[in-house]
Length: 293
Image 1: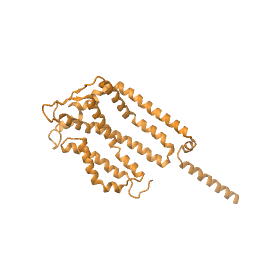
Image 2: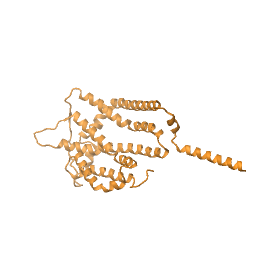
Image 3: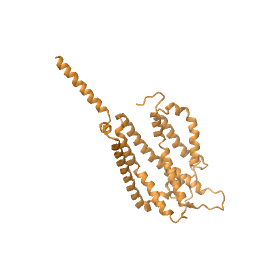
Image 4: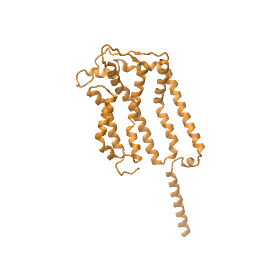
């Protein structure tokens, strides 16, 4: 009987050890046995696949660019842009709305550099390809770091990568649909003197177009950054709540810089998403003294 009891305890201990082994990362054994050169080789292939995907998207974007440049990139230069038509349809029904009723609004983009159009074709194809390949690049980074994480960390980081990708695209969409058109139309129609005619250079337009969209994409990563800083113990929920009033002032200044238009509606259109991001950050970070689980 004693031998059977001892054998039973041994089986239970062995089962517990197997269960504990299952708690470790899926490929922790492989990761632990991998040498420095093995990690370097894995990193090399990760970078290679990321670069290959990016280059494939660059080629596709370069081929499609003549078809999408007029209808997508230059769309905000004409009164037929959907945002202009939407506000023009509202007319004077809503106060503080910008006046987009001018159906003859059109901006001619000029080029003063011989190679500018070709270089713009290449650079714009690259940035568009980067946006297209962004989810795959994030996936490759995720595959590389996953073996070093524990199961709970894997779940958290998977959610973080998915959330960060969605927020990046949401920021780029708002930058293209709202922020850039408002900013561009205000600056184009602004005149310090009637004797000065605005002639927009191609490089100037593309630089502002790409900068505004990517800045908004990065700004929309604020909740993810706050969550990561919270996990590292740098900030907590009480910190963000305490400094909320100062954050509102900073966000108002940032919105005013992004959209130099003087009307309150345009300022509110940019400020409200930024404030929403801050409040979302408050909800995502841990309270003071909260565990890292």
